[in-house]
Amino acid sequence: MLEGLRTASQHRIGRIILGIVMGFIALSFAVWGIGDVFRGFSTARLAKVGSGEVSVEAYRAAYQNELRRLQQRARRAITNEEARRYGLDEQVLQRMITELTLDQKARALGLAIGEPEVLKLTRDETVFKGPSGKFDADRFKGILRDAGYTERSFLAEQKGSYVRKELTDAVVGALEPPQLVLEALHRFRNEARDVDYFELPASAAGEIAAPTEEELKTYFDDHEQSFRAKEYRKLVILAATPASLAKPQDVSEEEARKLYDEVKTKRYGTPEKRHLRQLLFAAKEEAEAALQRLQGGLAFEALAAERKLGAKDIDLGLLEAKDLGEIKLSDRVFASDKPGFVGPVQTAFGYAILEIEKIIPGVISRSFEQTRDELRGEIARERAAPQVRKVHDAIEDQRTGGKALAEAAESAGLEVVTVEATDAGGRDKSGQEIPGVFGSEDLLKAAFASDVGVDNDTVATRDGGYLWFEVAKVEPARQRSFEEAKPSVETAVREERLQKALAAKADALAAELRGGKPIAEVAKSAGAEVRRANEVKRAPNPAIPNAAIIAIFDTPAHGAGSAAIEGGRLVFVVESATTQPYDATSIEAKAAAEQLKPAFTNDILEQYVGALEKIYNVSINQKALEAATGGDQSQ
Image 1 (cartoon, rainbow, N blue to C red):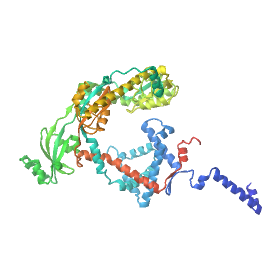
Image 2: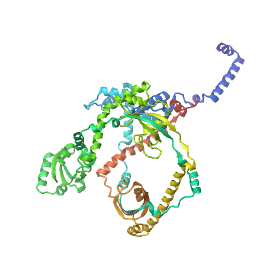
Image 3: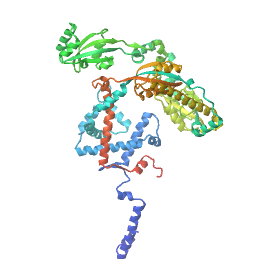
Image 4: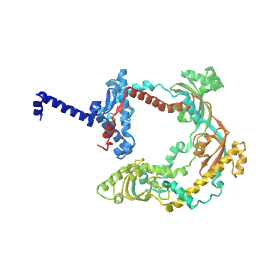
């Protein structure tokens, strides 16, 4: 054929015909499928960022590495489809685009880092240090191997990471959250309200008329989906966890008592606190001389005034031992059994003299007798943990040999648990929580993604154990008929009417309060008792449910309102609303600033990267992305 083309091209007419044919072919290519070539999109390119690009192969490698890490954290297999539902594919691509964008900006600014510096910084990373606190080469190699890196590829990635950090630190390193935001957060957290309230029981709504048959049918038609029968599954479950293998009865009283003594202050009580004031001195001799003056009768405030310090400058507030930071300092301060002076104590900031103004003793809220069984269980679970892996291997050996789950359990000296019917939330047909299933999200998710007769993967538990399961039966979800759902429909109608009537009653009482009527008089007319809650904040309160707290803070000071609570409705008056002045030097304010800083700097950094991406004109080949992760079903 090629010989024929060469022969034809030697004659004028042949050349004309060949030109027409080749033009027709080129036109066909443009129309039917290689337009991307002319538009500059290679099939090997997934995204373009300025003069750089993300190749399909590089993306696939990064995606697979991230998927493997996700599987290691979840301790189970995760499919591509599941990973895409989590958004893993787009997260990996966005990270690569961000890194490429910052790399190009760093090059434009002339930022770089040498190999020796990369090695030094890597060796200083905490994660690569052994028990001695020094770089551990074996640990380093093991972590790289588990993460799927070679030493060369990891150091290359680290080099880029350090340069990008150099750039981003220059952009956001010195930024602090705005004072206006910190003050708003302070007001939100610390606004305290004194509230008078009374509870209106459900019986205050009066008699609720029984709905007619026609009203029930209408309600059923309007809320048909609410009365669907859920899908239920019968499960056979085998657990090999520290809790299931634990033997609390083998733990002695002495062992439980020893653990109680170790943890009682931290877990079951309030630690001792001390109100402290502090003065710092540059030299030890100066601090000793100051202490002698204080012990001779000089007031702490007077000594502070000599050093031109105010009350706020020396007051540390009410602190626990851990709040002092330095062990040497906390040991000295909390060794004294009465108020007085402590020092001099050498600290990172100089020699400190402290005055203990007040001591608030620690309080233990739960006795050993109240916690004995709980502590025995904890010790037993800790002892059983090493056995879990052995049991896992034994069960897996039996399953590999083709044995059913019940047989495999019996051979290991364990028993399976049969759950007759559970919904996807771990509740039975009456709506009750099923022990051992309710709250086991990974187990339920796997069970409802499986089917009868399927050999399922092991489900790892968060306490380091394992669960095996078989789906024995499936009852599909279905639409219930009106007659079948009628009792539930009637209950729902009655409850809805009761809540409406109760809300109307409560709102009428709240209107009387807003009109100036004393709450004691309004509560008396409703047959209720007035209560007072002081310093209610936007935080859980033992006296008032969370829903009512939201309503209280939606109501202006001296206003009144109501909120639904379990068993009735709460009617309240906001007597006062106060907020302590904002002190930027307080421990709370500094902690809030530290908490907000990462979110604040991340927001600024996102805006910076977004602006760079616009400058570098980022474009993504969506088809290539779908194909790279197996998401393009047309291919």
